[in-house]
Length: 180
Image (tube, rainbow, N blue to C red; front, side, top):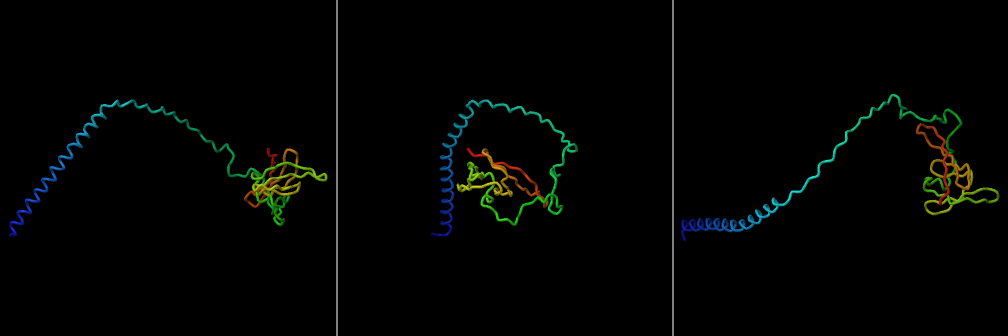
């Protein structure tokens, strides 16, 4: 076989293969396009339905903020008492040993009841770990240096010392009610 004949056969095969591929693709795509056209006609024939109108937007009324007549939010609302000034000497005793109930926040402690032992009233406090601890007036509980000042049948009262962040301390009375 000569080179010229080989090239002629190659040319016929290339043209024939291209023609065959075009015929196959045309035959396949005809059926698929018919299905596509039928589906489009079906969708167009459907009832489009009704679109709900958008809700009416209410107008916003502005508010004039008159800061000049209001209290400055960055000004302290309590009197600052520091240990340096010597006024009343308010502050916790940091040298005393912490008591077990000072490891828990007050909202994690539950007052279960109170008892009288030799004329002295004691309160029974349940910790988050379900331990029952007996306390009396003068004991400490909570994380804000809370000292128990009174125990009643309904609960107990504490005097807490809260740091003001400026080196001073503020007293706050807090009560813990009897749990039901």
